[in-house]
Length: 442
Image (cartoon, rainbow, N blue to C red; front, top):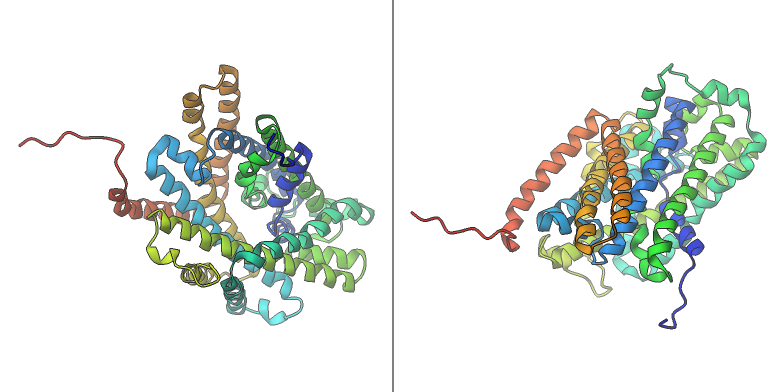
């Protein structure tokens, strides 16, 4: 004992669930309603797949505690090339995700400022404004950013969790039945259409193992907390998105830009709906503020490791990597322009699908490294077999998620993957090759 008070497994479980449940859930009911309540079946597949992914990363985190997370796991099996590929794709997925979060905020803001959803261009302008406001707000350094996000995230969690508990008093089975399958899809088609959307709500599970040094028995508690935390989030997601389909008629829900606010408005009054809407906006802005800083800080670390240009590592007097923040603000602005769609919901779906593809490829690379890590660590045979089985399930689910994201997202992800490999070709000479070749004799 070092005298430091450690967390219990239950405390770590709650922490894992809270970290996962950011702003990803608040636009999902509207997008899932476009498919119908049949899309709820995808939660079952995604919950099982996400638990397998979380378990695989928990095991990897116990065997490799170097900085870098997923990228460090990939390095164990694939060297520096695997590190960069995993890191860069994941880095881009964060930038894409930021734009999706900004769209969620604009959707809830549109009730107060209707012009925001009046045309694709006005929505795009609103998204870009939020991106730059939260970028500039981070110029003051990290002291306040983390605290704001830790508080505002409850603006989403409390209404969503609350709806999953009390919403059943307003649930109508006839409303739910009418919403079940309005497009007459097959079960598989219905699930395929929503896998990427439901996985979007679980992204972030890969960071669950980062608190392994905060519990008494990490080998026992971390995998259990990751599994139970993911399961807890899944229960709230399933209950809240199910009950809302029985409260709000499907057509209204599908056209809504603030589905949870609409539900509370119908349950209580428009005033209560406005309060929920304001809380959701605050949660989105807090989440976006935190991710803007995280992504710039990640680029700074990459620059210090000679993976990114040096200007990403320059900081101001408040230790904020301002130049990196501005560059990433420009990247997100271009993403907002390039994904502009006829409606706010369609643009959200395009970004979510692309974020999922660029996110799960690093998952597959990092999880496939677990076998190498276990062999080197000499884990017992039964542990090796169990972990290999779960990691294989996780990788197969991730592959299915890529397929379910659709041709457009797969095409975009493939182009990003090709460019990532191209970039690494220029960086590779900076790092010693693991293979020593004999000089060519002429």
